[in-house]
Image (spheres, one colour):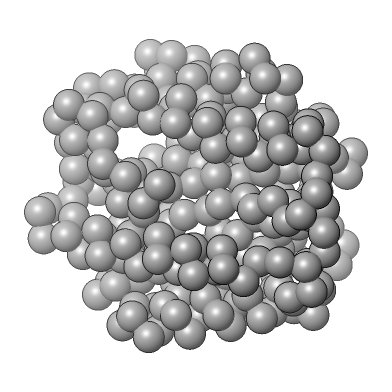
Length: 249
């Protein structure tokens, strides 16, 4: 069932979203060659707890850490550990923050040091694909309007769209209805209503669209052709005339 949030619920999600944004801002200070993904996880965990929120990913379906850190060809769900970030990496960080039973979800892909122009364009155009989809968000629009806008933008810039992973509703659970694919047909899918809260999250590849689960754990998803992948996500409130981003920009 699709949840329409009350004003009280929206205020709680605004707070969860603000702390999510601030956590990403804190992490940006530390993402550099030599730091381990596990150290980034601890920084995020401690920051979220210090701000009277909870790291919602920790323990979700037995996920063992507070954030996901996915590097280069890793699309999503990379588990933090001893791996060190190095010059030339692109690092996608995705996590959820909970406050009084309500959650926010946001992801960013960060460039570390020197990368090729095509990789830099991948990261930037994944971010811009989110905003292209966002232009379609308003009460009365369809989910497919968002999906189609993201897909068209991605293909125009020579990027492939991961189809097995999609955006989603978010609220009292990290994942709620409806699904928000990054591909589709305009005018199809659920009708957006004022008060809906969605996690819109383009996941785009520099190579082919196919992905698979790595054999190193039961979480990390990688591109089949080992091409770089980027991820950009915000929690968005649907309003009468448009939207509000709850997790900063």
